[in-house]
Length: 117
Length: 114
Image (tube, rainbow over all chains, first blue to last red):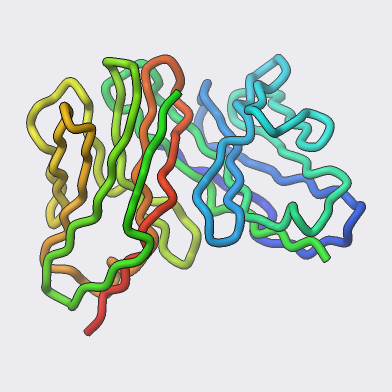
């Protein structure tokens, strides 16, 4: 299993500013992901955070808007840059501690509820 | 590419009754895993149950069980003896061995009433 601490839990930000969300895991994990959950919607994958290399972004998400750092196997940050009201969402980090094993359960942080005004 | 479809945006069930949430999916891969996650108002995503595609036997976890129909690409969740604490958003999700990121359905909002 894995315990994930995600900060902040919520924030209200002015448009045009940036917010960095932190995700700390209690064990070393290779697979880490960032998801966005728009109001009333499902979770959409933003990117896979790769340790020691650039993140792999999904279609519709770009590094300039959502830069990701992954300095080690227990920590990652997601920055939402130059925010607009359309960025108001819940952002969640997730890890898969045992990829390739029979149990490939994903664990999630508590989410960051971002409101852009 | 994989897709996951949940056709029931909202459902309601009385306490102690049984409810079934539907999910269909599509993938071209042979090895994949299916999950049901629960998201209560706290936003914390909680795994309810998982099914490996290579297993024919339906997974069961206490009051939760699935009906996995591989040929029909169907993966429904049955909640027995519903409890008030089961009130939450339920997401069906899938990943394959070629990538462990999850593809989620749109979710079903379940309300358990007294």
